[in-house]
Length: 321
Image (tube, rainbow, N blue to C red):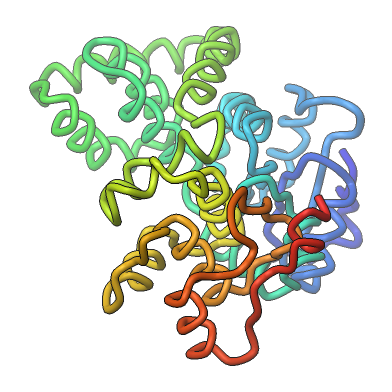
């Protein structure tokens, strides 16, 4: 494990499990050693490494990359770590970023905020089951996640499971009791069974993630203006919305605000795209070029005049990618 140097790690530091040495350095440097980044070297986390981490007796945050492989890695990490008595937290980053990216792009405070708002990794796995599975499969997978956690989490989460799946609390408790017995009887075997199912989790996560921005944002677009998705500028607008999301903005709240007091023009997708450019500090060089006019509409120009210090991208900027 990279970064585990007990004589250099403060006794009250929180360990942060990341995917590589650069991310480990980023965590340790950004927090002044209050969080210490650790990473497997040349491999996914192994059972031996999980045992080594557990032996340190420190709080632990899993901070894998914000992409599909990173979410799958966090799934594996959960089962390997919980069998050694750990109940790790997890942090999330804007889409496509890792801790080193966040430090480089947004600075130490942003990385510290992400770590400070970490949630129990078990909660995230439970939410995935309740979102992407139904019926008996959802109940079985949910209680397996819960069985690996300390007992003081069981009651509250059982109520959530029973409510969301509309099953009786008695049924949920019986399923949990069976899963707890299997876990306590042989944690290693139970862990291996869950690791064997990671490919199923990966398939669910992949299916639940829209392939392109055009696939991700049509529901919001139709709410804002039913004309948007039929416009030639719609792919460029969807890409801009995705860029705003990756930059950490609440896209839905932002676009609603931008059209609240001023209806969109006769070219609504282009108009809204330019309003986003004017309103948000996006990396415009990463945004695709509109397939239509190069100049913003009158409404977009008015929006820019109300937002000093902003400018719309030139054709050269938008084509840079």
